[in-house]
Amino acid sequence: MNAASDPYLYPGTDVLRNVPGLRNAEQLAAFETAKTAQRIYELQKTPVVSWQASLASSAPHPQRPEFGTASSADLARDLA
Image (tube, rainbow, N blue to C red; front, side, top):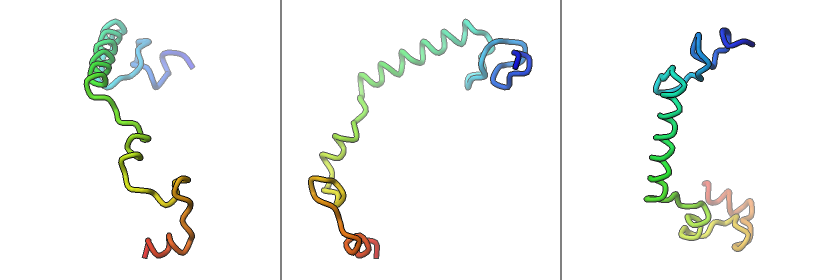
């Protein structure tokens, strides 16, 4: 497939289609750099809580190994 028929590129360019609609490669690179830096800053300021941390703070789950496994009867009762 050549650049002229590639559905992922803007026609007549070698720039991938993108949300902000930038068709210039240099402008797109600058935009991506700025957005990446912004997101890194946001993550440093407010980190994502890991699933392990969220599990540690939640009520025991019947299928977590440290609590054994729930029987089919227990699960059916809980669903009823």
